[in-house]
Image (tube, rainbow over the protein chains, first blue to last red):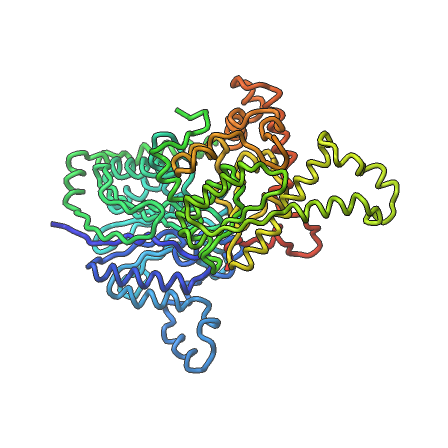
Length: 308
Length: 305
């Protein structure tokens, strides 16, 4: 049996209140640890809130400064300089890095780089180190969304190893572009982790779900089934200026079925177990990925680009 | 298939909508540091729906209803409002606004110095001798607006005394059509029903258990006797809501909506009402002078803390 115990943390971050959000992260991390989970996943921008607008500027963290400088921060404290102000939220990453000695942590934050670009980013912390950072590639800027106004887009869909399993992180809109999961699975991902901040919207007759939720669940099922992967969807809840996030975090198995699900619109922690033997079985029975012809895809894409 | 008509709130989707609206009230109220709301209860269906939602969200101890009749208000309105109060077992206050409204309109009628002796202005705009005539629509409108703002002013004062927020009771239909008084009934701290059309309010009301006597009467602002929303607007909510669903929710152009079989005059009438009342739905314009101007490029959530 090839089992992984993990936890989905469906939280309602307070926009702009990083300390309050950190506290909530730590609480959920402790609960997940007690349940025996080896991995905990928080939603998109879980440390900062989503519709930040100009506050993006205030809540950004440059992780390059934080993780390496545990020694530095101690020195700063000793000199009596206000650690929090001076270090500009890096203590948040440091505190989660400490926790990651015992459990792998995936959470969302606003990242700034040396050139003062801002990203809608998600980190994966493990064993006291930053294992991976995914910078959201597709930044929705239409309707109620305005991400490109503030963020620079990421450049890749990285695949990295979590607890021995090749995994990828897609952030919300990334997953709506089927090319993202296509790239990730062909790079070897078996676990597709999708963190999001998806607003509940659209009502339909005879449907007990919001339209947005229905579309999400259809998409997740397609990704799980046709890419023969585990899809782990962690969506936030709570309200920002009247906009409610739908929650409904869930896991889809490689057979396209929804295995586990949290409630819509309420906070919650879901402790689950996924079985990679089941994935092996599905990939043997339906070897779509084995038969994928990357050469044809490459040739076609090249010709699309050449002729546009 | 793309749904081309306004979705009905049925027993299946009600559960989710109800939960969203309740969480909205709970969380957006809590965030401000208080846990109570006040609202004006008119005896109409909109404020009743808001009130039922508020009680589900915060509990009856944390909801206070203010009933603010004017002498011309129908007695049925007060009875229906009291029915809601009784059913929900909430605190209520009855504050009659007749005195202050009548004093104001009597005073400016008799004292022309209010207008700085500008006789031209008096002549062209005001004809106070007409104010007693029922046919004077202008005066009725002014009095109606004044009453709506008087009620707003009372609600905000009560919200201060009761350490509460003012809960809004305007539905999506009247907000879009501009069928409300700016800084009057349109004013609130938060509004759970502002994205729900009047047609859907009736459906929601049924699922919430709002008494039948509130559901089964013609919609009226009740600012004067026998006022009727639909008579004043010149079309029914049912028709306007279908058209607005296509114009606003579906973002179809008026000519597309007309091509779908809707009456051309009414589509244009509805569309123009939406455009002309845009100012009521936004904050006042601010002349940009500095590098960073409120609501232009000083951009934060209202929930920014």
